[in-house]
Image (cartoon, rainbow, N blue to C red):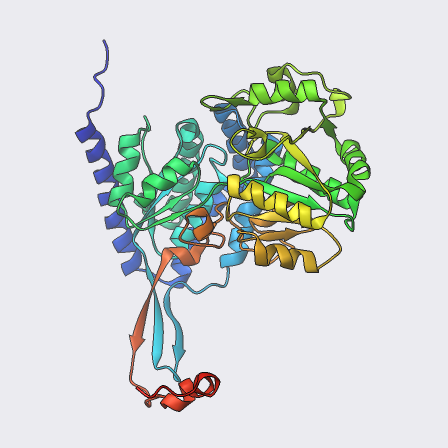
Length: 477
């Protein structure tokens, strides 16, 4: 007997019921709230993933069901990203009085935003939702996850472990829910319309739908990381870091190196360093075969993106020198723009390299690539000249310049840099986003200001305009 499809009205009612339960749970959570309670809730959600046996089980399931990434790196990502977020929020105040300033007469009080809706990508079906849940609970919110169709099974299992941890501490399971399968655009759209704030990581189509939903939304821009290697760089160090970053979780990260721009003075030496680390530069014929296989009319080839290197080689039908020790593939860029898909994001163990005459030329190439795809996200540089990162930061449309680091480890926060741990990187107005920083708990907290009178501080006109008048003369009328 066939099962009748769910109507649009029924799908909307399913989401409405989820949101209603979340609102009830959140109101009780806030009413009985305390910093200790919020902190314990966040720790419970984090341990659901970080407990080693569960982490391994969930990572294995995620790779098996999505076909993206690899188990070893998923386990590391789940652990390190979650641990990093916990480090960032450990001593953060998110309940009660945040500050009292007698000079301004303002007292600030932390308040939850309410019910969070979080759209989760298939590339990170575990670390991203856990990051979102931890940040939401830390601030006294409820949250509803909307996984990708590929990520449903892993997200369901993760949620089960979170709820088991909640039972141990007497926390309402309705504080963390997910859109039930089958996942549909109707359900996702209804969720976007009904919650108090949206956090959207993944496709730019989802980001744009969130922005047009009428609900305040935190979206992130597309990544297409370009990294410059100049003539002053430590070539061996740069090659090792780029290889580690590019290969991590089979390049599922939006911060994975998609293009390398190598200054000619060190090009041959650096390509040799890369080869020793596992990069394999393809000749023109095999590069063209790879491009044909990877870039298809309806998008990137699903048999290549985020797959193991042997699967990439087989799917592309190419010949690779020293294939048995290959870690990722290099192709030389022939141009930048719509007619040259190799200049865009690849989500695979494939990187394009470009030749640059000098640093000025390298910067120009990086700018052209960014304007084509990835504006606002980030750029990297390997250099011993500390003025060059400053130049890139002052002149390129990016929110992050990553200096002498493995890019995908550094951009989303690392234990040896000061960036907040996150899997969602805002790209500012350049990338069409409302934030230019790494998404973190502060974006899920309202702050109420208690405003009292203070002694008046009205300035004289001369104190404001004095310097201006002395430059141009005081206006007569």
